[in-house]
Length: 444
Image 1 (tube, rainbow, N blue to C red):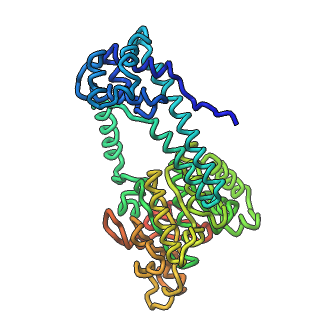
Image 2 (image 1 turned 180 degrees about the vertical axis):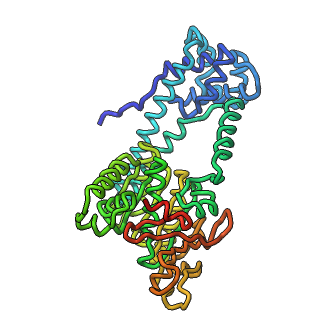
Image 3 (image 1 turned 135 degrees about the vertical axis):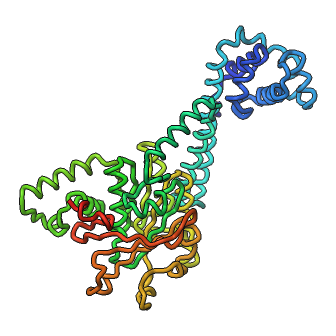
């Protein structure tokens, strides 16, 4: 089979090296934009390395200093010899086109990196020793790594940074709630946490029927509909149609039973439903209801969404239904999932809310409020999470309690702040959570 030559442009490489010997500014630009590995020919890599050494020592790069540096490195012969090194300035008439030539070298270098990466991945795929899903995740990481390596940031004038910083301080001043993160829409909770912080893993755990999904859908609605921020909702328990129906119920304030059966009684209710559909239609909320989705697939989808649409919040409902890597025990599997979700939040720099189901052990106590110790069987959940919150409704266990419709959000762990219990009003027929002291005015 014919041997294919990797992408390269020898003339552009020579033009860059020659320009670096002609003008100091050209050498500065090339040293900022290129690495030795960007050159195809080994002799050019060696010459460029010597030039960067001289430039770093604030020495001129010319027909005297460059051969001397190569001799010091004991690489003059490897660089093509004295005659070739001295010929470089004569191969380019001017340094005026240095930036254009640098871009050509970078473009060819990127193409070679892609070919090398894809070849390695193809070899692994043929070997069959790596799971396809894991290989896909590795492919995405490597491709993104190539892209990131090409995005080198330049100096920013302090005047620009001052303006950006002042804008942030002004926004914080104008935001009387003093939030530094993403608002959930629940005032007391936001005051306690300062909002959902980028890179945080937020665990919300409860027994069944406490309203975990409804609570996170409320947050998704507050973030996606009211703030027009992008939300990725991974639902492993409910279908996307069921979630959208709940969102419409929350927004329209129409009884969920009526929406499930289509028994709307008035034009006014149809009007509210139509308005809710319009609001939800414009919201950047994206739902993935793949059953048993694994961390690798979730990571890949979240990365792609952030790249294409932006991403401000990830919600996972719920953690125990995720597929982890093969492990000796379910506890180890959950621990691996937990660590991977924390890593995903850090990588994408967004808050990630993960729901967790608590075991029946909670039911055996007289006081059925969950505690951190209830997470022990779930491995590293408590350790990995930046915030651990529990949902508790007394009226679920005691129908005669005075605390009807009250849900306690028990913030039991807060890595960067205080812990406390926040009370919300739960409007069950709308699957809607409201701020306790203003729920009457918020209902309609």
